[in-house]
Image (tube, rainbow, N blue to C red; front, side, top):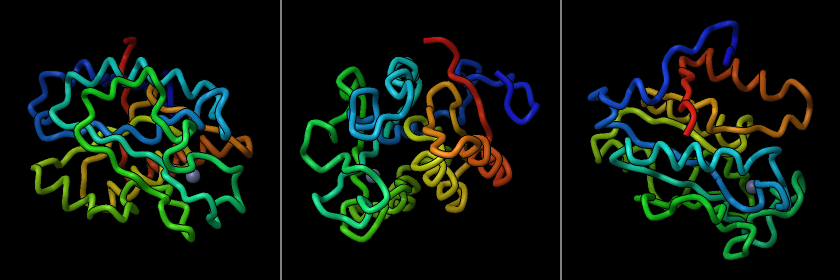
Length: 201
Ligand SMILES: [Zn+2]
C-alpha cells in the first residue's frame, strides 16, 4: 500500500516485540452496525475492518472501543441521517467484533448539541487523563469513518501528547465529497501521525 508517495514498511506485526506496545492502546472507533453495509449511515466496506481489528487484539494490553451513542433528537441529525441512537440495534457493535477483549467502552455524541466525532469529546471521563494514568503513551487507531471520527480522534490524541498511529487496513472512509479521505490523510500526516499496516489477518 502506498500513501502520500511513501512506502509503508512498518506493520503491526513488526511492532509485536516492540516494548512500546506494552504502553500502547488499541483504539477501535465506532465499529457499529449503522456504519456498516446495511446500516443507516453505511461506510463502504465498513465491515471489512472487523477481522483486521480482531486479528490485532492479542498484541495489546489495553483496548478501547468508542461508540456513537446519540439521543433520539440532536442537532447532529440536521447534518446526517438518523444513526446510532443509543440502545438500538444500529448502535450496537458489529456482531463479529470480538468484544470479549475490549477493556473500556466509551460513548460519545451523547448530548443533543454536539457531533461527538472525537473520542476525546466524551463526557463520561477525561479520556486523555484516563489513558495516561494507565501508563499509556501510544495509541493505535482503527475503525470508522476515516475522515470523521477516526481523524478527529487521532488529531486529538496527537494534540494531547500521545504518539499516534493509524492502521490503514483497519479503517474505511465515506468520501461524501471525493477527495475527503485523501485530505484527511494529509491532515493527519501533517500533524505527525504515522500510518502503518496490520497486515493480513
Ligand atoms: Zn454520529
